[in-house]
Each structure stands twice: as structure tokens, then as C-alpha cells.
Length: 62
Image 1 (spheres, rainbow, N blue to C red):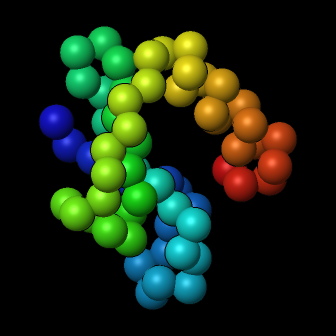
Image 2 (cartoon, rainbow, N blue to C red):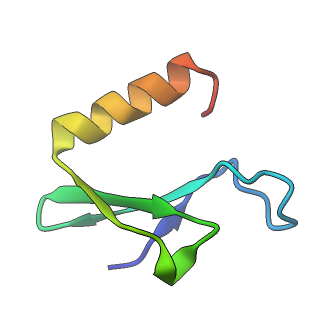
């Protein structure tokens, strides 16, 4: 499955707080976009991923 990077991620590296996400088997995985393939991958259920997005919006991160 293909990783999707946050739209707030900048190619020039000035924004270092970005993650990538993908769906896999009805769940979600997230990782640190800076680390790429060497990043730990965290699995989240649909409700947990939705909660992560709500928290990020509340903090103004997305």
C-alpha cells in the first residue's frame, strides 16, 4: 500500500513534524515522514485514527 504524506509537509524540509499514513486491512498505519523506511510504524484502528486527526486539528497541526 502506498504511503500518503501530510499536505502540510514541505519538500524543502522546513517542516519537520510530518507523518505519513496508509490504510491496510481496514485499519491505518502511520510513520514519521522524515525517517521513511526506517521509521517505526504504528497501527491504529479506524476510531483511533479519527481521534488522532481530531487532536491534530485541535492543535492546529492540520
